[in-house]
Amino acid sequence: MGTLGNVPARPDYASFIAGHAEVIERINAGEAGLPLLDTVLRLAQQALGAAGMTFAEYGPGGARIIAATGAAEWALGRPVEPDEPTVVRMLTGLRTQVLTLDQIEGEFANQATGRGLHTMLGTRAEMAGLVVGCLHAFYPGVDDLPSIEHHALVEFIASSLAHMYGDQAGLPVHGDGPVIAALSDGLAIIDYDRNVRLWNPAAEQVTGHTAAEVLNAPLPFPVPQLGHTIDHRLPDGRWLKIAASELSGTVDSIVVTFRDITDQHRRDGDRDLFVALTSHELRTPVTVIKGYADTLRSHWDELPEYERRHAAEVIGQRAGELARLVDRLLATTDEAGPSGGHAATPFDLVDALRAAERELPAALRRRLHVRLPVDLPKAVGDRTTIATVLTELATNAEKYSPDDSPIELSALSDERTVIFRVSDRGIGVRPEHVERAFDRFWQAESGDRRRYPGAGLGLYLVRRVIERQNGWVSLRPRDGGGTVAEVRLPRG
View 1 (cartoon, one colour):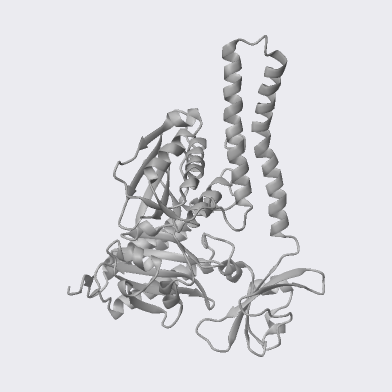
View 2 (cartoon, rainbow, N blue to C red; view 1 turned 90 degrees about the vertical axis):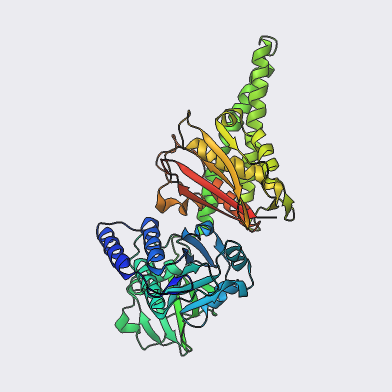
């Protein structure tokens, strides 16, 4: 078989057909979500002769790479901003494009070429006229030119992924954007005269209007400006949140999505939950501090020296926990985002991690196995946040792993980023939960709070802190059991 650069002249159809049959069998058996998406990407990489693959899921303000394989695995968890040149090119023009990354400005293109990836074959995954994500295949040479057969196959794979979204087969991972609106909320496509051309089944349930009543008639409620949302009250007293955007690939159609928000005011719900969880989280250290302080005040003369010292140590430790908890809770309510208030500058990550290690509680320090290289390149970011990030990741690892198991802290670098990892041998993270774990207040073991207490804020805070520094963070199950949390910051 011939090649075009490093790309086989034709895709490996035999391996693809065999693998695709297995994927269908797994879907029929009830499998879904990220594990299946990872399998599809690995199958696609082999069939397309690519060095690596990524799939970016689109949400309200951009995208995030939720699956990555091969030479592109470094990008897992990376946020993708809508104004990045690579994204702009993929979302405009032809559905499937070949881009030479070293000719494109932007951080993602720089990071990819810095790792030896130069050509990208990308296509949009679309459903009901909405882009739910983008599928990318990467090749190492600037002269790698995928054939028309590669184009056709990558489009087929992207369409299959869009079908998984349509079936709500564990996707989307992030349930807060237009993808969810297209799946479970009302959706209408209207022309510029506001006449309805499409009315999905969810629209009937949300509004009570059947398709027969509204098709070819004016939309029965207001349309917001493109790219905006409005809240509208229906005659029966219910409230809708309505959004509008242009339909990709057309010149005269508008997509309108709407949901019933009568009984769900997310902001009020979050505020109530925040207050409840805050009081719960603060109560333990405050109670311990008060108890030991009362004991010292009432029985100072009766207590032996070692008990007074022990009480003072406990008070100091709990006060430190309390200070970190208050910082965390305040940061998670700061919509501007926590960044430590410092400009991004080069700093010694190993030195910052060792300093942060010394601030951890003694019991956690004893479990921490540290393997940090002496020649790690400098990272670019806010050094003052590293203590918070390490504390959250190490505390999370401690909470979900046996008392006698080690927690490992390691670091390394590649051409564009400096990386540190916190790894444990605990209960592990289910593949379908690796992204949801970063949601605010979300906990995998919500029904077992006594065993795994916490507010579900730690990983949410870590992601916000790191992304404010142009880095990103991801979770993955660890081979042999446990979890690996990986943080990447730009290399200095």
